[in-house]
Length: 439
Image 1 (tube, rainbow, N blue to C red):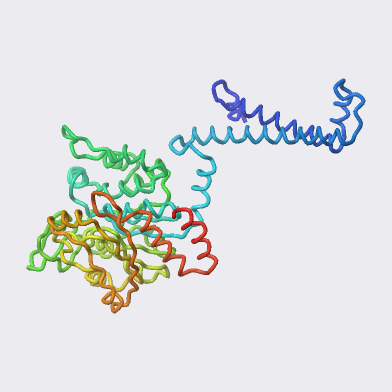
Image 2 (image 1 turned 60 degrees about the vertical axis):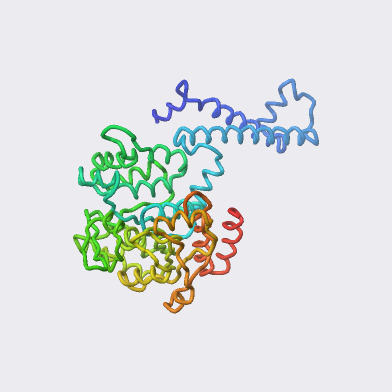
């Protein structure tokens, strides 16, 4: 009870709106009294201002004016009160009240989507998907051993935070501001090359009692739309057998190899997934593999105990998003069918649909990538159909200085697949509320 009195403390900025709201309520009550004269009306009539006035048209007119004025006054006070609370509780998200309520409430009724992968590709898809639903679970690979993540992993023995950080930023309510903070990299001294977000996650891991708790804590700080989960909490190392028989260890060594990859593996083998990840896969409306590096971002998940089995058993729609470009060494000269064959070799037959890009890539970019040993992935539709998978061709290219999936276009392609597999009512909702809002 005594804590409630803090609302009346000086400087809170609340009292004025509480008083104004009370005035509005009093005006509404007085206005109603003019419609059905009672005790309050008789008190007013006893005053000089209403002497001689009889109940009739004039009373109804005065009553209507008072009720309207009261409702407007109380409504304005309530709006300012709620706006003040929202700004103080979450200043980063302060803005239109209706937008905030929409994001918090309406998006929670969207489809349950599990996205599995890592790297830039996964965060690209998350940026698009979060505009349609907040029921997102991103399951992120933890095999990175390069850059800032690799240094922190080697020095402190923590799980690599880089891909997790990118996904958290992608799902943040206001990603533009948080991206500047968490993606900041030091450029000099012993900290050169480290991302502030990586260091923040490592510090939270120490303070909160583990990497999983750190991810959950930062998720709350950023008010993300959905969940981000590491695929496993074990310190796994990725390895590969190459076409010449050599065995290489470490994600960096695998991705930079100039030989074709026969198979990949994890050490230790049989590592355990998070129970939350298996639960999300079981309850999903759709499971999306990729986009992202085939061998180092997507397929490590399929080597974790229980994940491929959970995907097979799930009744969800299963989609693989094929990369727009091949990668030097890792997928050189791979077609879309080659990508799918590699997935089936390591995890079995998992997907129902494969999303491929058929949009035009600017020639200047093709020349640049070709000089680096990369080329556009050929969709080879006939081979894909013979493999028992339905190809979905879309123009997915984002026009920029690099070749990437367009977040909004890719998200719409995924949502279209989900809703066309549902009832006619859900299809109508998609066309009306989703496509129309982003077209």
